[in-house]
Length: 256
Image (tube, rainbow, N blue to C red):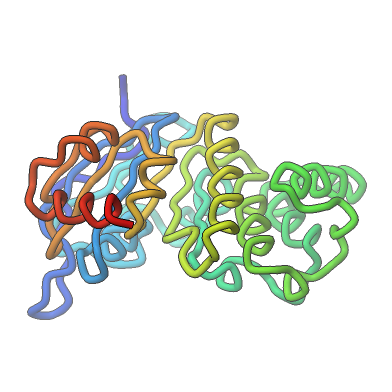
């Protein structure tokens, strides 16, 4: 089986400081990979390298596009990267305000993504927007309301709808429940888990919260000081952690 995405020996440096070192993994369609670790572990740097927002000092990221065949993301032109981001990839920010247009209606936020891939019929776009609001548990009557009037959890669910409405093949999520109350987190995670399964998405989730990884991920990469110190199926890593750092992280959630 061919992976959808392959990170190969990625190393990122910020001057003398190393952001991540020699990180490799394959990601398959329908698989959710959680990248976990404390602040400064290198997980956000890795996400930036996958998105090509950070230029690796060495290594590469390859992706199998809808047209078929491996593409090295470093070889893509800016226009092609933008097209990929609009059509085949989604990115969910930790802060929904970074991924939404706060002065545009909820329906408009979803509609913009549809228009970016060629939809033009206003009635069809609005109908699809309403359908997706309901899929992320936002009342249909809020379709004309701006996100600034939404709660934090509703904004995050709207951002998820905006990203998934075009059925991307890969979605990257940066601490998608960070800063939300526990009860709000649970609702966002339930929506994510359901939609990832329904759409058969490949997903990479960056999180410091092992409870999030346990709920959503098939596999886990544990990062410390820019390196992957442990990886494996989620159940195995959380039930039988091998590296002392992973054992420390797991013991912390067991004590909560």
